[in-house]
Image (cartoon, rainbow, N blue to C red; front, side):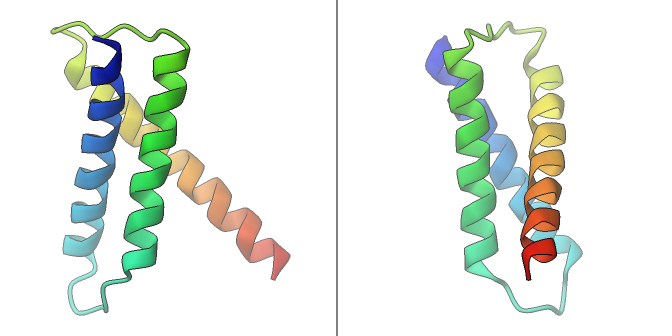
Amino acid sequence: MGIATIGIALLMSVIYVILGVAKSAGEQFEPVKAVSTVLLGLLIGVVMYISGQPITQAGITEQLAVYGGLLYVFENIIKAVVRRRR
């Protein structure tokens, strides 16, 4: 069950990328942004796996929402730090 935690986090990050591409119709696709988002999702999944976060059938929807929220928060924190350093 533990490895499924990483899979769910990766799934959420891929969904997040797809939604971002769909939202930005007409803009050029940036693979670096997409890959960094998926890698951040992987990192979140690994951290949740290491912390022993259990997955239950009832909790998958909630965990997808939590991973999506974490992804959004961390991605924006990283963007803010990078932009402030420029």
